[in-house]
Amino acid sequence: MKVKNRIITLCSSLLCSLPIIIVSSFTVAVADDDSSRQAQQLINEMFSASRELNYDGIFVYRRGNRIDAMRLIHKADANGERERMVSLTGYAREVIRDGKSVTCIFPDNQAVMVEKSRPQKLLTAQLPEPIEKIADYYEFSVTGRDRVAGRATWVVNIVPKDGYRYGYQLWVDEDTKLLLKSELKDDSGWPVEQILFTQLDVVEDIPEQLLEPAISGSGYTRYVGTSDDIPVHAGDGEWRVTWMPAGFEMSDHEKQAMVANDMPVDHMVYTDGLAIVSVFVEKLENDPDAMQGPSRMGGVNTFATLSNGYQVTAVGEVPQKTVQMMANSVVQGR
Image 1: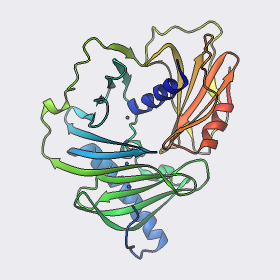
Image 2: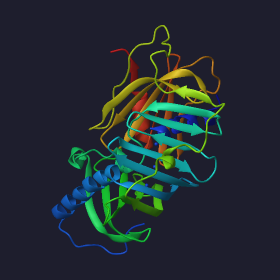
Image 3: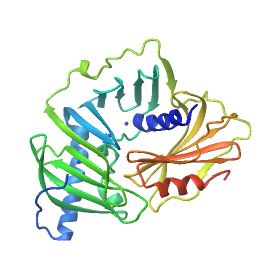
Image 4: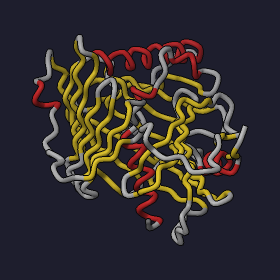
């Protein structure tokens, strides 16, 4: 598999695990402690709203020089949460999610990938509840008010306390508490990824047909992200990351099939409760295009290295040095 395709495959996996942004023109004078408490309260309310409300919206997603428009439909009822995300530009990709699984439909690859449900890329689904769980690693403040999609918002900053993670600026709807706009900022404070809702309707109910895929997937290759039937190579042992930033812990470890790749990979997920880094370990079979070194797609940094016939790749929305140090620390065996 070509290097570019391998990068796209890894980022597609993050999409399936599937995105949010201008500084307020005026600020609110609030004492630091009060601002921090208000910010954390707003984030907790934002988390609850994103899970409990029914909404249908269109947002613009900018990553590097690429801009995409997407539609997000979310329903919450007695059966739990369900949602559908549809790409409105480029290939007509779709992501369907419920409490058990995530189905990603890729017309460009003629593929359907099914994975177990895990935190999605939209920030409100990543945030822990309560937000105090990450307060040791990030500082919070309310910096002002603004308007997004015709709605009044609070502007909230999340600033990392070290150089191993990125910061965020959030625009939270004053009325519904939904996240309307977000900016991912690198270690220099520059926005590397942005999401902006241009339209958002909060409704009493979402019709079931809006949660059904428009793409049938008929004739597509189906990949199941995790399976007990995925073969394990002789000599395979437990892989582990021996260095990670303070506060990071493993949240998942599984064998995973990848789109456009016949070989399964070990997939380890690490998070501090907000930032997420995936580490993939893949057995190489005389692959001349094996990735090595750093690469970047918008706010997603990747670092790949070789280890005893395996390729180790760390990928996440964190600074380059974080994925490089984590990839280089991977060892086999306990």
